Amino acid sequence: MNSSDSCTCKSETLAMTTTPMQTWCDPYDLDTALGAGTIFPCLNLEFFLAKEKNSAVCGNPTLSAEDKLLTQIYQVSFGINDLTLYLDTHPDCEQGLSLFKELLRKRLDLLAEYAKTAHPLTQLSIVTGTPEATSYGWDDGPMPWEGGHN
Image (cartoon, rainbow, N blue to C red; front, side, top):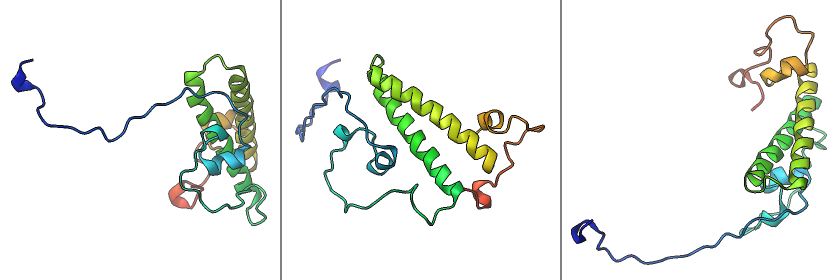
């Protein structure tokens, strides 16, 4: 590369950052985690603190049993996704791996229960939730554009 190929503009350094390696901390309960955007309290750096609200979605008396179950599936799925990011950088963390396995089992159980009471949400739910099915029932429930769950 010769001198005519290099950038001659003067640049300013606006900021520099360092990112410390995350360490394990006891996770939030799943209801709190979904509202906070992370399962790890040590990562919840509230730069703009929102007004506190009681998220307790699963305890909301106005939700149907089906909606409460679906909310639990959302919460567990969020926890699994957040733990996946953590385990990508900490593959040998026993607490993280243990919680990951626990949440995977819980998600499978919740998906199976939802399939029994409503309709399958995943292809796996056809086997775990409705093993007695005699036909492929993936499209048994309402689609989102038909008023199904968001």
